[in-house]
Image 1 (cartoon, protein in one colour):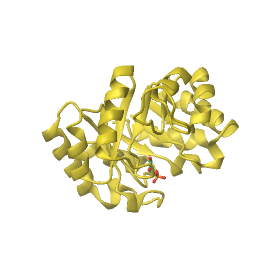
Image 2 (tube, protein in one colour):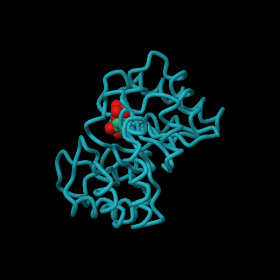
Image 3 (cartoon, protein in one colour):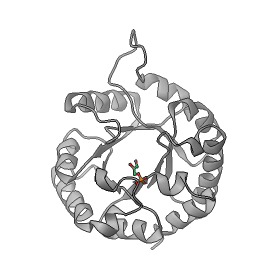
Length: 221
Ligand code: G3P
């Protein structure tokens, strides 16, 4: 699975996000790989309406029940907008462990797929116990650097897969941070990850289609 997090990048809000979706749809069709896009909340509805093969996720949900919570992200609302899953505990939107657990449980009740992020393999193994669908390990110091975790720190990928699977073999393992090209994806999969989570390599690309296609090629054995 190739997860593209659009974060708060200006290039991929509104029209840019729609162009990125169009490129991702083309690649998903051509290569038959699972692609997820996590846009700004305000773009979930539009992208989900136009998505075919590509899945639209939220970047975060708050562990709240419907009611008087101004400014919070209600899980039911992202689902209603068309999201089929959500990131939880991204290092740029960290949560307390108790809230991670609540968010996973609410998402499960609503049928939203969960990707819980972790800064390292130890935290990855800890959150795997909470039974999310995926754990994504991303060393924060490599995020946005273009230096890939799978190339610069392969031991993080290897240890994450080992430790997370030991704790909970049902959890699928993703890795991210700095993943930029075909080789980075290939290595992540070689070391046992089941997919990658990335952002800037795509959001900052001159040509979304060419970049997503290159990354998709990393999945071809
Ligand atoms: O969520 C993806 C992420 O934090 C990695 O960002 O820009 O290094 O691919 P980037």
